[in-house]
Image (cartoon, rainbow over all chains, first blue to last red; front, side):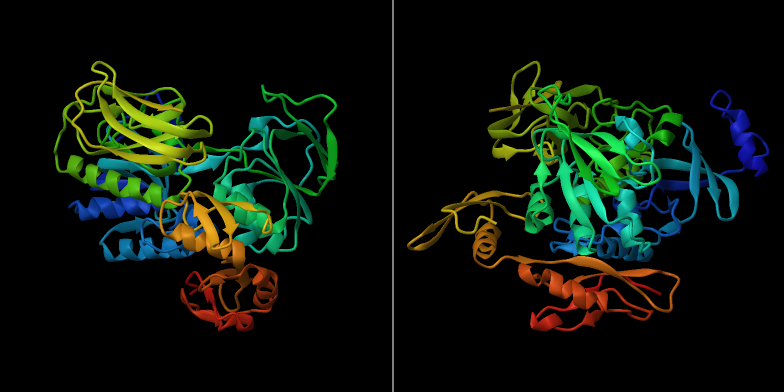
Length: 434
Length: 122
């Protein structure tokens, strides 16, 4: 406890090591977070030759959010079959266990400095850890009612979809009898089906945008299968009820996403679930002083997934929101391999070429590339549903096409991953044109 | 479902790519467009003629600090069997230890698929 208050006293201004804190144990690679990205990152680092790999997980068990995702659809890319979240987690954890990786659960990283010192509150007490490379894999948080400012009373019965998922799937708690879901994110859609299975009526899913924000497959198998209505361009404008939610007022929205006066209607329910977006969890990243992107909410990274602070890497939902766990793991394996190389002392020149999002592209990642890089992964998301389109990765000076592909349809809900083959010698722009 | 309309617009749910399929009933059988892989044909045929689903839920465990064990079907079953199977699963009170993949109900309701545990409970 005394050591913890030391951290508080030091604040951000004076974060050097105090003699009372040291000495720090040195690891080649330290991974923060034991979900699909972090587990893969630890494996990736080990397979790339890192000797001393430590994975730190805040929860009492590894697996992260996979443990509560009991539905299937995981593993299609990593294991070539469809399994559930807990199965996917156990397989990765078994690989990590066989891999000679040290895992510490019930341990929380309180602070991370730019020179890669971690202040950790573990089961054994407070201690310092120094890492040649650090991999950030802390995942994300859900947006809350407060963040979207729904007016009305403050009764019990309002949950984020993910917290409801944990209560129902892990803790065996009945969260209500009649539910309205605001937002059509994947977790909200999955929970619509899950609550239906538990005998809880789902009165409808209301989505602000004119399209569903979750995957198409989830709209079909979680809503349409059970006749649950999905109302697009609509939102909850008021919560009613004193002790417990008694109803919500829903209304249509106009092209500027503002409620249309006169379209309000009351829907009786005792529970409101929110599935209104995820936010990368970058509190530690901010303490390390690394540059964040306003477009992704995560770190600005180069093609090796290294952030603006040398030796600190980022992957999974803390970097940008993924819709498929397999992609988060894929990024984790890559970050692990690059982090192992950095830990060995393989220094690369500065990444000074920029990758910018062009027409219809919300963001492209990585944001920075080293001159001469070829065969690298590039992720992007479109801003709106686009049909019969062509995606072009274009050199900003030469106009050269580094990648082009036709798509029948691209949706904002679907993160796209492409491989750019030619060596890059200029700034790039990713564009999508109909 | 619009099983009787001349054009059925489906989203393939076999993987997260989610291909948009158009299925037309013709005299020669089903005409399927929009799939990016062979699974799309298999999916559209099945989805229009006899839809199948997997399902996942969790059941209380006896003899462990872990409260629940999550379960699924070993393979997809006819969609109309979802609720009858859920009612069978609701009767389960398996005892720890349970290993991942352990069969908790074999050939549930004669569907040919098993209810299996999806996690290990010590």
